[in-house]
Length: 278
Picture 1 (cartoon, one colour):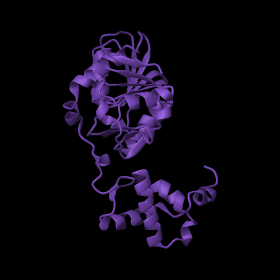
Picture 2: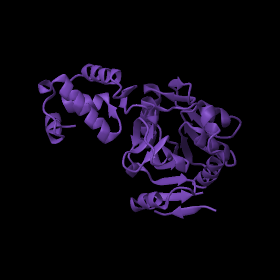
Picture 3: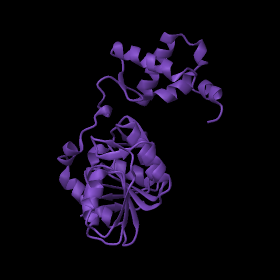
Picture 4: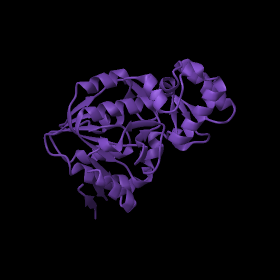
């Protein structure tokens, strides 16, 4: 039984506001210490953001992060760094994810399909929960489905659906298409509803994924959808991954399993986000 809860401007000024002086006046070691402070505060750092904060080139920031990694103080990642031994970089394969929390994913999928009406346009990102939704969608007819996931497109073969695949560069771990081609195609699309699977869901940070390119495609999907529905089991909550997709405030609805703590469900509802627990 499910439970439902209705529910760039002046960079120099920005640096001063954050308490940093101009990058050129910072000695390398002082800057690296401030990077560590920023990492401790935020849980992750991104090269581009640090470059703006300190007023130095991205090459300089990468050298700083490489030095800090050599000292065992950070864990380098594509586009940034994390605390040592962070789990935020963990990026399991689709096959590994498929074995995790399968009953919860099936219940989530069944609830998600109730939000879909015949003739509507549905967008599905990659992932095992969204793959389960694709299976459930086959019970309906006359849908248009937009996806960046090769396995989902294959799953829907043989239906009367119009299936649109974004194109792009294949990520073998997730069978998803990423990169500028996928992003450009999505700018031309419009969907009634997006079902978005995530690796991390933190009330403060937002929805996250281990891969920067995947996050960019997901953001393009959000921009192209009238309604954004996060679909994930409760273990994804209070967990952060490397790349933020969107803040929580960009969501309209969350579907997850009934082991979600009441405090999180109430916090989401207080922001006007509908919550369905299955």
